Image 1 (tube, rainbow over the protein chains, first blue to last red):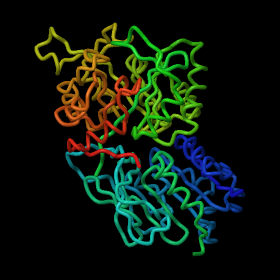
Image 2: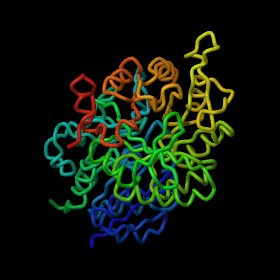
Image 3: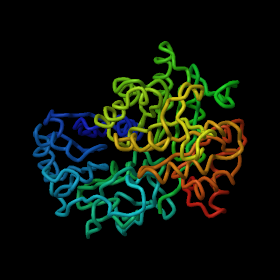
Length: 204
Length: 259
């Protein structure tokens, strides 16, 4: 059975992510500091709800270095919500807290507008061609978002979503993937996306 | 494009879904886990489970119900009723809820909102407000009053002012129930919903009074609601989330149609 290492940085609730992964038939192990579980990981998921500042715990526990090394070894990695934002250089939500810097850009608050922030609810994805993570996601499918900060659209963007402005709702480069939405809360579409991540061989 | 959310609400008493009119005369409407799964399958964007048992012995029943309901549910799941502390909230999250809704306990101690938000994030805190127009006030809508104890007792707060405070303290959403229209199937209180929605920068879920598709069109338009709660409209096969959404789409409301 495939084993997925889920990173816990004490910033909220992992239950939904674990439930969805188990529903898809994988074994899950959770670590909040046991680096062996990252060093031997087959696949890593970094969930995330709450504040970007909470990712400081990843640095303090040594998880950041262990994850960086795992990514360099080619271990498939999926960051969800704040877990995706952490893949960037940082976020204006916590300017003094650096992200992993795998993607050079930074995450910013939604621009001033009359629309409500946070962006809460089901929104659509405009999938870029050749996304492995979003294979089979058709126009008219929706996913569930809840966030106030967003990543910019760049060459690594796998899907864009429009709320106030276009932003990167999924990012993908090599073995590193991130989604701003919550696949574990996005019904059949979300489970399909998680399944794509679990199926991806990493060397294709 | 962001869609308007249709939220299926299950009022639960002693582990069973019930439905009453203005919170009294309860009738049995089925098993929560079965009902939640059916609503999600038929396109409900979110499930809210409100425990109206509110007794100490009922806590364990509720956690069991939440665990059982969450097991195969892959849409957002909010649980309310009897959450009086951050510890209560933690238990409900552990059982599988994504959000908790707090009502009278937050009125009694508003720092409860801050506490849950700090530990679980603002997206996990929904502040539920039971509102009733104040016929004696100069502006019965703008001066609507907050009620507690199932709408029986005045809380001594104005709805708009309390919604703003909840937002400042870190609530992620407001669940606004009009006690005037709850269970009546005569339509949402669109005037009140619009006043609250314009007063805060967080999403407002309208609740109370859904009876027809037009009521939903109205509350998303005139009422400026971001989401709407439906309970009685879904029970007993009156209408499904799917047929409701198909009708809303025809009326020009942006909704997520089930795949």
